[in-house]
Image 1 (tube, helix red, strand yellow):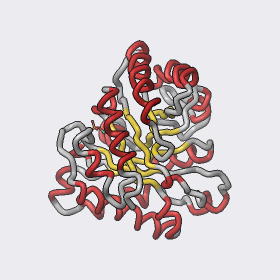
Image 2: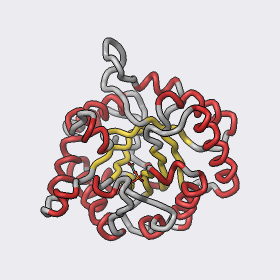
Image 3: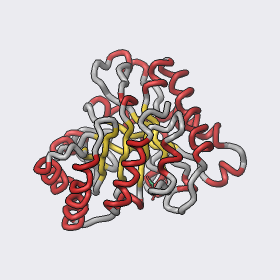
Length: 272
Ligand code: PGA
């Protein structure tokens, strides 16, 4: 991870969650590509993360369209093959053109048993297989109300990235870790952290990473904000010094909304 150079570009990632059939995936990608082609910038990456069952279709479309939109998945196994019912390995994702993987989304943590330990295992296997992880962290409403945000975030970052030093030292690949700060109370609720609140936590994540892996690493790691990002609040968020893009849920399901968020990132490419 020592060559973490990804912060040179902002990243707008769409987490489609358990939405969109194969037909709907096709349609949404057609609509997105049509708009993206005329406005895209080399300074901002766009990633879409459909369900596993739509990856094949999405990969075919994105290859045929040659638009430069990249493909991500919503989870990955810490194992590579074997008797792990319901799991999917990094290599299987790569066969479908997947480049990015969301790890430890709060919905996985809250409903499907993911925790810092499993996130750490998924992350190690993701990096070993040269996929690009987007590791999610975020506090709940009660944690925020009890002034626990900083403590919880630091703990999530430290434990999710635990024992990575030997991996960092031995790894020659450009692994491009991205961290997404997603306050749980802001996801799908229409409530966003103010841009200053979001920036403060993103800054805390950066200092925590610097403390763990060195200042250069922290400074070059891309940190996204996620939680009710939309076309109206995106520009304000992206104008902050430590927010390098967004992980978008609801607004990623409508091509024009997602494109507007992408455009807001282009306008704010120099905000550091
Ligand atoms: P939201 O979801 O944009 O709908 O709040 C974000 C996410 O869950 O990643």
